[in-house]
Length: 248
Ligand code: 13P
Image (cartoon, rainbow, N blue to C red):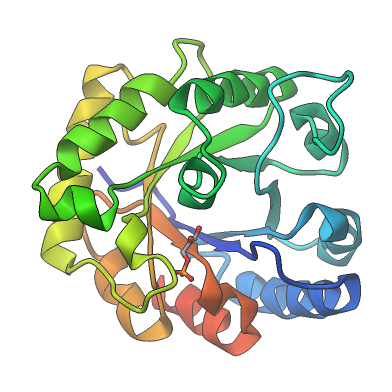
């Protein structure tokens, strides 16, 4: 079932010095304010720009999120950022288990599970990413791969939670899954989450993977799509503004 308003989320990945990030955030804030009746908007800047972007977004409807967090609250974890630190900066969300961490940094579902618990502890909403690789898709293992990630990553603990279906082969490639594929996987994933006690209404499923202004409206029209997780197009104020407007 569709949530009242879709979430349009911009994952900036490792892009943007503070001045660029602030300029982009200001543009996003203006577009989000104009579309506040039809969608929620969130941005996920790199850690180094979170504080500056939080300032730029003050008073705007745009929510802030981190791109990852550590599972511990504090301690001897050189280079890591805790969920509490993100909350302290004004974050509402944290992306967990992105394929660039699962596959790029060999992060396991067990670690994603522990990070999701940490997010709950800090009062953040985790957005857990799942998705099959190209090889898994070719072998017909798409649902097995996603089910493994879901079973391994989703904690029993209560807390608001979101998911993002991001087929790995569609990320940054310009190859978007077809609307039919997205509908099939989202419908199946929604039923799997329901069986785990995580109803889609409380745990909406975003789609991510080469979302652009020209495909956003069609993807958002899919019944079980609760929003979009946008990478490359979220770095361009004009393109991201067009994706936001597609929600209307
Ligand atoms: P692209 O939109 O660049 O394909 O990236 C998607 C993504 O990884 C969002 O988290």
